[in-house]
Image (tube, rainbow, N blue to C red; front, side):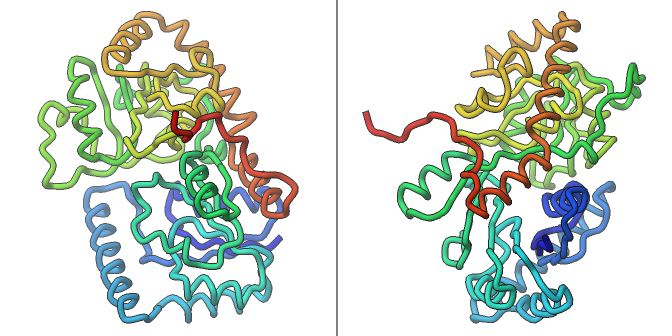
Length: 358
């Protein structure tokens, strides 16, 4: 198949990983990036350059859309014309206005599909509900339940996953570099909830990897933990495996599902303690493939226990890696997505969580 992918093509971005995996599966990926070209994330200077580009681009788009204009339709037309034919269009976020989505469908005459990779808190205008999408996929089964129940549209659960090509598994007894050694680590954006959470873990040696925090943020006890360095690929795998424990605290807007870090930490072969969610046990066996915590006292008890029991950590990490590799890669998700669009399957089975009023 020739698949048009509309998304941001940067290192470890969803669109980039999808395009790479589709090529491994024998499909042809046609790329369209709706945003400014971003540089490598590795330095603080690059972070602020990228932020300025993104803010400027979003401002220009907002003005154009308020005036009923679209600066993307011409570029979309040229991309589709150059592709000659498209069998499916896969949009990786809410990148298209309804008019743009309609034009893509008119030009390609192919199914238009959304794979939304964020929590419900990122919906903002949620233009995808006003566009002619054939199928919608979300990582949180709560979103699927609400949209299906209230709108009656073709919407399915598709959990996140990881790429073994991007996050290599440990090779034997690899040495741990000093810069990655820690009791606890995680990787992700620094937002207020995460800072408030990690203030409670200042008694441990913690490394928080990711882009620099915003200048307004007061880090306090968390400041020594912040590495202000984006890690990806093999470097992220080393950061995860260099810590005794990967603590995966999720944004409160992750309601029933889980985040990409759940799969990445297991895929990298790291031991993980993750924020419990109703759908977690359907994806991994808790206490055998990863460990879950329910509240802060529970988390601290488990941190102290597993820091003192490295053999148990290693066994759980190995089991989690095996499960991730055999069930939770981009190969698995993309095949399920294509089969669902064609009507052969119906997305990932949803966990049994109910919105019924007692």
